[in-house]
Structures are given as C-alpha cells and as structure tokens.
Length: 191
Image (cartoon, rainbow, N blue to C red; front, side):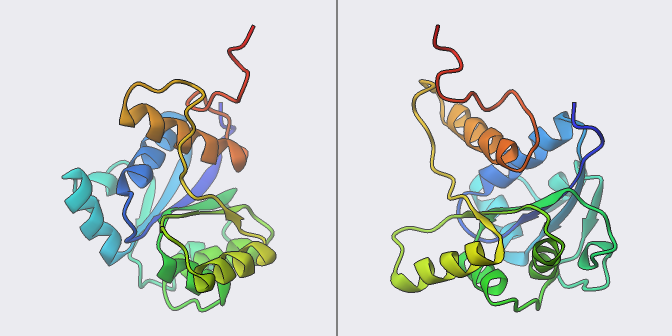
C-alpha cells in the first residue's frame, strides 16, 4: 500500500503525545519504514499522558536514534527518506526549524528535509498563540514546512477521542502523500 516508503517521525515535548503514538502505530500498520526520534521531554510527556514509555515506541519503529546524535544517517541529505513528521511539535522545536538552529537531531533532520525539498509536517501543539508563535510558523512555512496543528474534524461524527485522533493522524499522513483509510475526506461517505 505504501510502496516501501521511509518516513522520519519525531515526537517532542508538547502535549498531545497520543498523536505521535498513533502516527507510529498507523505508519507501522501501513508497512512504512519509520525512523524514530523522541526528545527527552517527548519521552516524559509520552509517559505522563499515555502511560507508555519511549522503549515501547522504539520497539515499533524500524530504526531509532538518540536526539543528540547528529551523526545519525537522517542528519544527512544523502539518506533517502520520503518525508518527516514532527508530532506533536513543541514551540521550541518549531523555533529551531524556523531559524535553522539545528542543535538536535530532530531539528537537523527537519532542516535536511527542507533543504532537500522533502515534505516536513509540523503538528504544532500550542494554544493560545502569541505573535511570536505566529511569526515562527510563518517563517517555517516560508522555508517549505507544512504547518498542521492537530485540530480535530467533526464531520465524520466521531464517537471517541481515539476516533478523533486517528482521523487527524490519517489526515496528516494523507497530506504528505501516504494513503490510508484512517482519514475520510469531506463528502466521501455522502451519496
């Protein structure tokens, strides 16, 4: 279904770790090769919000890297990947991406995706937003990033929180070119 796609998934310390977990689960179910990086705060939020550990997630990924390993293959444009998602994306990570301040593997891999013209989706998870946040989003978008706050849609009449999360993640994946059945476009079930 995915034609052997290779995707980088980064999970940072913003609230909404369930989005990152579901992204990994859905990518794995689709047979996508997932290269996983979890920031230290991402690991903490995963544990606090989901009761899972980063070790639980590492076991589901094809490859995983330490967030400070700037010598990892995904830190180079010569490593072929089909795109990257940062889910959820903290404002700190957004700032690093927007300013090309690659002091971590997550920001370096994102910067590589931008310079190589590969899709980079930032699921920015913050509210309310002040002008500095908006400026950073605008800068990242101008560099080529897809700004995708995980805002749930209700037209599919979800019955559970998990329905909302899966549909949002499915939409993120569809946006970077990964077909999946978790996302039902508007009107797809309308006769």
